[in-house]
Amino acid sequence: MNRMIQLALSSLLATGLAYAEPASKVAWTPEQLNFVKKGNSRHGKELATTCTACHGEQGVSQMPNYPSLAGQLATYTYKQLQDYKDGSRSHSIMSSFAANLSAQDMADLAAWFSSLPHAQHKAATQNLKSAEQLVANGDGKRTLPPCFVCHGSNGQGEKMDIPALAGQQADYFVETLNAYKNGSRHNDIYSRMRLISQQLSETEIRELAQYYQQLN
Image 1: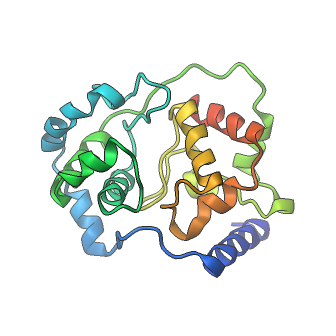
Image 2: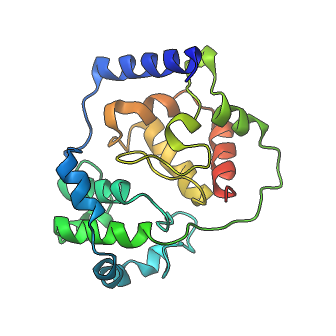
């Protein structure tokens, strides 16, 4: 990791720690990670029959404002379900759904969705040079770290609380970053995505959404 990236991440973390706290009650201990890793995908598939209207039969949503869950990291899906249940994240449908799930149900659902191939979209036709720059290099003038540092060079995400972005619905991506930007969503650890999104323009957000949607 080069010096610029180290400084950007350090600055971002320091700023977040100055006024933020962990925005989740999920503690990623080795035991917790192992619990999610051992989720029963067969049971998760059964539970997921109630999810198809919004998220698709194979976890690929046909509704632009709802996320595709296929290929999402199990740890991330598990955390989001826990956050919905304990109120760290709020949604009229998902909060009610998660309220009736046990921790085992959540691990099983997460295992099922992570076992599915992520959505495949056609390559974007517009120029995405700005997004490519942010993903590969960030912006040192704004202490923005490159997106790939956390989300991976192929949008695959990282274990625990960093989601896979490859193939994600562009409209949902835009709504999510705008929700972080205006503070209506606040379950990102130490405000990381809130701090980043506040420095992005609407054009940059839309370009990043298109970039990750067509990433295969």
